[in-house]
Length: 244
Image 1 (cartoon, rainbow, N blue to C red):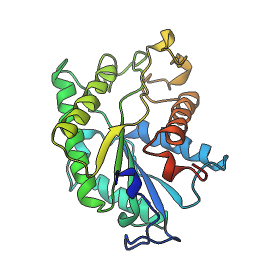
Image 2 (cartoon, rainbow, N blue to C red):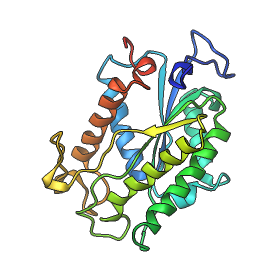
Image 3 (cartoon, rainbow, N blue to C red):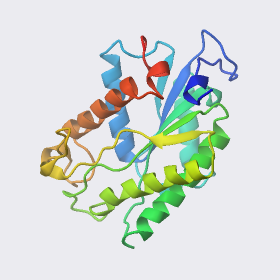
Image 4 (tube, rainbow, N blue to C red):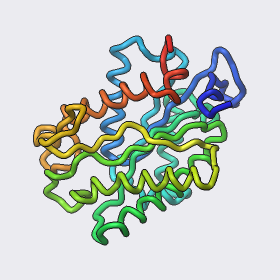
């Protein structure tokens, strides 16, 4: 059976239960937190989601990959607190949306991308250890960073984060490691105003004054991509949708 086929409502103990929950957890830094929060709001205005689905925003501001790759980081206490506030347990987390970056990269390509790849692999290991029923990890790279006015994560580092995700997934395939399964979430980068084939562009209005964190419109663009992904992807729609 595929990893997606194993996803089902779970009781707080982690045992299958028709009255249990399926937890989709967001892991990452401030951008991931802002984007997932808007995605959660979008879900509230629709009736598409499985009524057994619980979304938990575990992403937190200022928590880059170099920090949360440590299993003893205080970040993970914050994740536990948010799960508790949502009325669910670690045992019910079956899917994760992961988006991370390394702050203030400066080594150039491919060194910075390789460092992020290694950090992401460490984070996936932590996820597997903390969440025994975790089946699926969806990883996204950065949005466009060409408007950045700080060294936090500008171009070309934002674009190059996609290689870190690509290499992470390739290594998981080569290692024949399936638990948890790791794959692409929606791809978020686009070449600014030049855009891409599906029409997605990223404007100055899509970021805050630092040029890095998404504004309301930027968060909405990412939320729309997330919603479209979970509604249509073959690994997600069976457990995400109310009527797949």
